[in-house]
Image 1 (tube, rainbow, N blue to C red):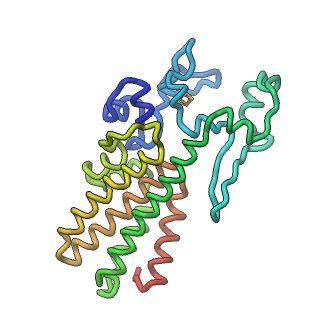
Image 2: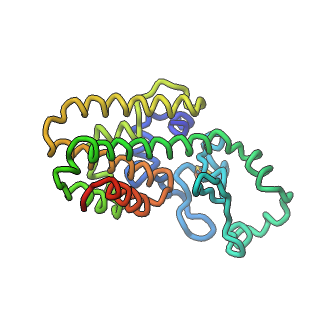
Length: 253
Ligand code: SF4
């Protein structure tokens, strides 16, 4: 939403013109850079990043990466393969900063909060999938199709996965119709979660057979895994992890 607003576009228009992989990745089809690779579609010759104040977290962190494991946040770089040092030697003349000061300078804080909140939303979606499988009689019925589908979804890339998700759900996930100010990060994600909850509640009221419950459990897992692609999580590892948890609670497959 921040990027769309910075370009004066609707979310739908921004998704169509500036993203690929079902809206999860920025499109790189601009003028080739010095390595010959196309630049980001938001890069303008002679100007630079056309959305600089709204640029996403990955751009703010670059060339650092951020990962959360066991509740600990770590920032990494690629050591001697550090791309800036190899391709842009002029950066050697820039002031040397600690990682902490670099992050403050790049104003990453709100964007990191957003990433963490979306990780939580991803887990919430997986929890709904668990409830549908484990608390409705579906697992007790001996069902194996749900976990088989979860496993298959975990191996898909974002484009293939996006095609498994009905457009109305994909749009709620990728281009939510929210009136919240995009600068208000935590309220934005909370509003997004509430929008999803309303839709999930509507769906749950229609589930009158185990087949319908299975379909819903597969859809919820597809949404969780699609979101994992969007925030750069390990989708395959997550799906295997969630399958093992479901099995340890009595699911089959
Ligand atoms: S900083 Fe990010 S959004 Fe801006 S042009 Fe570069 S890759 Fe694109």
